[in-house]
Amino acid sequence: MKIFGKKIFAFTMAEVLVTMATIGTIAVLTYPTLQRHNTDTASVARARKLYSVLNQAYARAQLQSGGFTKWNATTSTKLAEKFKPYLKLALDCGTTQQCEMPTYKYLNGNVHNANYNSTSYYKMILEDGSFIWMRPSFSPAGKCQDTESGYANQSCGVIFFDTNSSKPPNIIGKDMFIFVILEDSIVPNRMDDCYYNSTGWGCTYQVIFDGNMKYRKTK
Image (cartoon, rainbow, N blue to C red; front, side, top):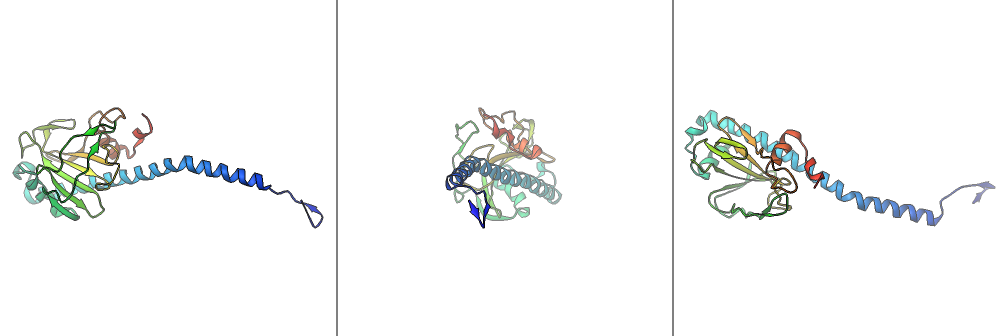
């Protein structure tokens, strides 16, 4: 092409179309990865924030009411009553079914057949839209002698957490995590099952202390 007697090099229409098609293909291929990264980052941030909030609430509750064994927290309601004054709630569902619990799956895709709608669990939705529910340990209730999530004979109770309320994916280790109440602190589940062919409960520990979901990159 010549303009004012000078030869100008330009792309042909075919070259432009090929370039646009290539860019479009790259965008289609990379978008799911970027979307997953953003979702994972948000889940990690909310889980780590809740970890901090729960430990602060637990410390304040103990200053107010003494150590856990003095709480007589033999039911989920009695347990939740100690935490509620220090949590910012959007909805307090208690042990009712006002907060409808979804069906959760393990990291390996199998269905997790737990009835979280039962009165054994006290359910609350936080101001940021995340969902927590809790119960004291089963054996014996109100004590810190149960075995939960890799903590032998130390558990006082458990707190479950869904980063985005009841919205999908509802998968343990992706948007649902578990914390254990010990006598002096709240800690993440540390079971050795953070793999795609396992349940994923122990992914809570990696999310809190490593700050990532790298386990999602391999199957």
